[in-house]
Image (cartoon, rainbow, N blue to C red):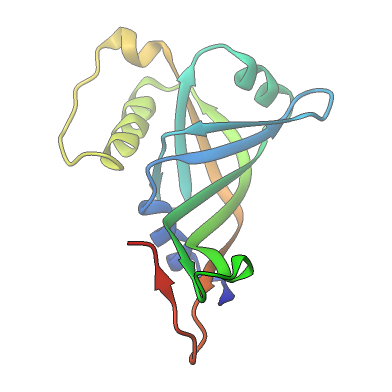
Amino acid sequence: MRTVSVSDLSSVEEIIKSCDICNVGMVDSSGVPYVLPMNFGYKEGVIYLHSAQEGSSVSMLEVNPNVCITFCSNTKLVWQNEEVACSYRMRCESAICHGKVVFEEDFDEKVKALNIIMSQYSSREFNYSDPSVNNVKIWKVAIDKHSAKKFGVPGEKASVFTKK
């Protein structure tokens, strides 16, 4: 089973849009990594996230806005020989995106961002109260760099079996 690199943005976007959560990596002022699983929205090269107005992650990002956001989709355990541990592999697709967090403060732009986030999970339209918009921190991350891989891709002559 092979790992295949994917470089085009459209493939990265497909992976992003197929996920329910992402993992956002940042560093604290001492250089210690900090990773949060978060829900998100994506539109036109920008990842939208939200959080409370204050907290550890917001404090870190105010000092260093650089983030690495990872996505993993279509996970499935596969193997070529059920008796051979080394033949087991996770088949999946992953994307890694780098960028800088910019906090959105404009009320109308925050509503747009919330709609983008909600459209990742529902086709419904939502209304937001003024306090809910005012009390949320919106993170916008324009993707500066991206990469993606497909893991566990069977070779042309491989026989792959999956767990039932």
